[in-house]
Picture 1 (tube, rainbow, N blue to C red):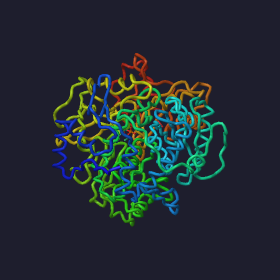
Picture 2: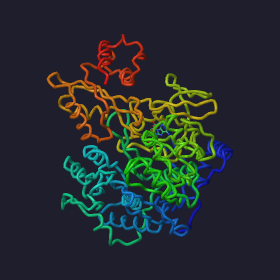
Picture 3: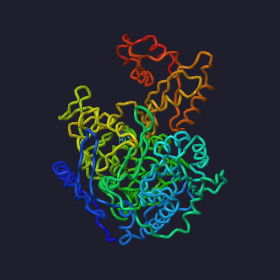
Picture 4: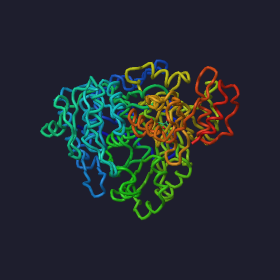
Length: 638
Ligand code: WTA
């Protein structure tokens, strides 16, 4: 296959401004030009077809491709022997694995063949429940190779949460590991899958088990197949499934303000073009650079910026099995120095946690190869930004604060490393092709001037916008396209300053962001309510020094149950069981009533203020159904 160019890289702020203008005045021409740089089996006949009211968005309609040919095959000639995935294991002295583009291609082909031999093909859903091992990257790509749809579930979710996701997408197969080493923990991954199956996953025909640590696992001959038994003898080439640009590439579940998590759907063509374009430009990646994103592949950041974006651009992408604090809080910086990392991308919660351990952990490590350092997942507070800039970036490496979402597929507002002006806590300007808007929440009108604050929306489609929510298109419409007529509504509020730079204020809905993980308050409440002693609960976020937001639960329990720490532990255990440890409440307050409006709605605004310690800002509470409940809540705050 001929090796193709990469999308265009902007090289100055002036060029950014010109490119942005062009992308707005001629979006189709602009994105067609980027798309030309990829390998298509058949070129598109329509660049864009859209109608946000349905919503319908189609990019590169009529075009056919396989994203893994663009990630792998087209690099073989020019950089086949370059490292594609550089793997750093949990143990500092453990074996580093360098998978070159040629090796990664061969491994992906073997797994693709193995999956086909198990009867998996185009359109089938594969659930991945795996730790950060190379086999996860390999088999996700193999899934895309054969046109199956991947649904990666973060391996910290509980059996119940896993079963819910498997069943929502009717996955035919689950790919997992035996165990997962993280820090000094050894997590029984296969056991969680077994528990999920026991809860009932009728669509699952096969559990493909990767031997990671080699410890004993329970075995079910009817379902379980060893990964290595199927994969090892497979041929090293695998014909890619030729996909339509708008065929589904993957589903990724994320939390919203109501109901169960929804499966955000991304498609092949647009996602490919946008993740590559944004990766190259935001990180200003140059051939030969070593790039490291510390996310987990279970989240969108890992999908777009550990796997697809970097591999599409022929980058060397570092994949890390461990955690930032093992064996101690210098691990990130040790790894940066050891592998001479050039671009580093992490989350504010990690920055704050490492900052809190003290500067001695970051000092003395050679970070001189860093050219761009990035942040993602939640608003970064000024103190963390300054620490990151000064102690990691040594005061001179540009910080890119990248705002985006599972639904946007790629980075939307961000500086371009070293080119854009930067202001602490400001994500900055929208990327080319991204037409942001601030909207007045009362009138629904777009706010045109600067400075302004409002609901953060997008006016025009970009190639990697979500296409639907799996199995429920109406939910996609009402969640994202009805709050503001004619626009995609992000769920975030933002401010635009006099220079037109955006600062993200945070969610305006009932989604909380805990250590960069999205959590629906309703989801956590449902889990708490599963406890038999619980009558009702209300969950809100409150400011937390390390996590950004913590989870505060107000719980009403039956009279005959003791309101004590043992009960708190039981409630926490219930949440772990229903969702996973990431959703467990930090604080639980027992109350006899929740403040409600006359129509019976819980007044979350008041609960949020109390949890944040802002009791002087409660406003008028006299119109509540039960104003006396407010005082009880204040008196019992934990
Ligand atoms: C928040 C993660 C401020 C925001 C890629 C958004 C941010 C949600 C930033 C999406 C940022 C993400 N500054 N807030 N740089 N990046 N957010 O779907 O509230 O896990 O709506 O995607 O995280 O979280 P998600």
